[in-house]
Image (cartoon, rainbow, N blue to C red):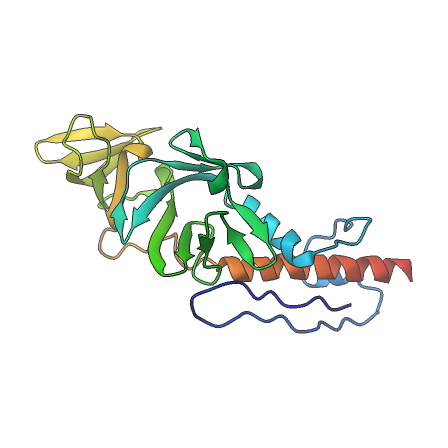
Length: 233
């Protein structure tokens, strides 16, 4: 069996290709050989493999996100739920839910995710003639390090909005930030990372693109199908 390669919408870069995989029938489960899950595949064939794997990728995006326009942080938090159901600062707009099709993740208003340039922590959005919209996954406590430069993003609080400070420590639930004249114990939602401490590796980078994630999931389905055929022999 050979399933066609995934060719997502994108603005540039190479398209990932997965060639046919030949597995010898030597009594070894091919899924275990490749280190992939050995759970049984669906009993019925999947009608649209492309759409199925993109839906799986879409579910990996569940969580809270910040919105940037040309690198400028905008107010509000976006929450992605099951099956792409999306809240914008707690409000739902049906035409802005995320959906999956064979080519990638998109909204009904014409915006779509660049699958080659995006990953599970960063979404690059495009629409004909428009670009520069980015969503970044909201960092948890572990997303900050001592010495990081951060910005206060709340309109109200102990320091002025957009004030810059440096992370000086942590409590169980908060980030200690040294602003001019005072130290504030901030929730992760109160601040945004501006710059990593010099010499600190950005742990969010180096993630596989969403296009590559889709290919991994496709390969998992392919190997599961091969496993089923192998078991039936």
